Length: 85
Length: 423
Image (cartoon, rainbow over all chains, first blue to last red; front, side):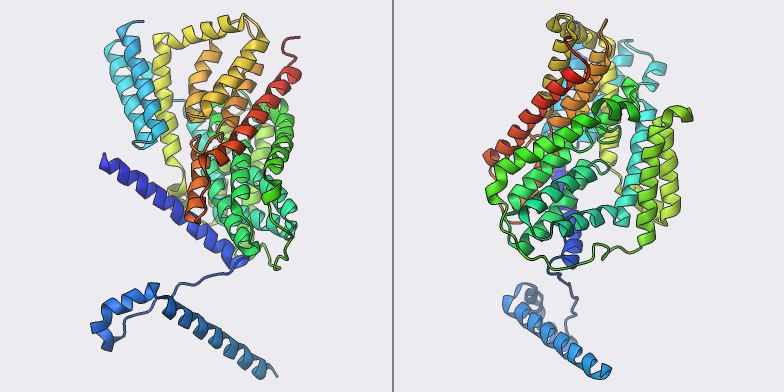
C-alpha cells in the first residue's frame, strides 16, 4: 500500500510544482518577482560546508543579499544615466 | 440475480470505490477492473473476444486525445495565461470588477482546459493578485473552482463526460449548443450572483494596480496567434461537422496535427503533458460498464427508471438530472456518465434528447458541492493550504452546495421549458 501512497504524494508534488511554476510566471509580470541564484562553495571554505548550505534559510544572510542587490541595481541605474548624458 | 451478475457488480463497485477514495491510481483501478471483466466475461461466455475488442469506443478516445493536444499546444504558447493577465488588468484594482472578470475567465478557460489545469492557472493568478492587493484569496479561489466546474457545460469538448455523452448519444457540437448554450449563459449569471451574494463583504477594497503588459512573458506572439486560430478552427469545424461528412474525432485529430505542425513545439513534450490518466480511466471504465451491460442489469435499471417515472418524460428528466447531479457530488462525473448512458439508451418510448440533456447538466453541475466532490475542489483547498490559508469544510460546502442547488434547480426549470416536458 505504501507504494500507492508514494504515488499519490508524487502526483500531489507534481501538481504543486506546476502551480509554483505558473505562480512564478504571474509574479514576474504583476507581482513581486523572485530570482533563484546558484552559489558555489568557495574553494578555501570547504570546512564550512554545513554552514554554507544553511545559508539558504538564513534570514540575516537573505536580507544582506537583498540589500546588496538593491545597492547594485541603484548603482547600475546611476551609471547608465551618467553614460547616457 | 445470478452469481455471474454479482461478480460484475462487485468489479464495478470496487473500481468505483477505489477511484473515489484514490487509494490506488484511478487509471490502474479501471484497467484492473477491465481485465477482470474480460477474464470473467470470456470465461462465462457472456461475450466473445470479438465483441470485447469493440467494447472501447475508439472514436471517443481519438476525440479526447485530439482535443487535448490542441488545447495543450495553446496552453504551452501562453494563450490562457495571457487571458488571465488581461482579465486582471481590465479590473483595474476594483474588487467587484476583479471578482467578475476572474470568474468569467475561470469559466472561459475551462471551456478548453481540463478542470485541474484550469484550477492551477487560476489559483496562481489569484494568489499573485491577492497578495499584491492584500485581498483575502479564499472567496476568489472558491468562486473560481465553482465557475471552472460550470464552464463548458454546453459544449461537446467542455468536459470528458460531455465528450462521452456526445459520442455515445450521437449528439453533435451544434446539438450541444442548440440545447444547452442559453442555459449555460444563464447559469453563469446566476452562479456569479449567488457567489457575489455569499462573498460580497470579503472581496476587499479598491486599490491601485501597477501597470503591466499582459503580453509580457509570452515567448512568441506568433505561436499564441496560431494556437488561438487553430482553437477557433476546431470550434468552427465542429459547428459545420454535418456538412463535412466526418466525425468530431477526425476534426479533433486533424486540428491536433495542425497545432503540432505550426507551433514549433517538440511533439514529445506535448505528448508528455497530456492527461493520460483520464484517457486510460475512461478506456478501462468503459470496458467495465460494457461488461455490466451484457449481464442485463443496466437494462433492468432502465426499466426501473421507466417505472419510477411512470412513463412521464418530465419525471424521467427530473430523475436523471437530480440523481446524476447528486451522485456526481461524490463520484467522478466520467463514471456517472458511462453508467447512465446504457440505462438511458434502454428507455423505450421516450424522446431521449431531453434525457441526454438532463444527464449532461447533472454530471457537469455536481462537481464542487463539497471539498471532496472532485479534483477541482480538492485542488482549490490544497493550493490555499499551501499559501497558509485554511478553508473549513463548512465554509467551502456553504458556497459549493448553495451554487449546486441553485444550478440544478434552474437547469431543471430550463429543461422543462426548453423541451416542453410535461406539456
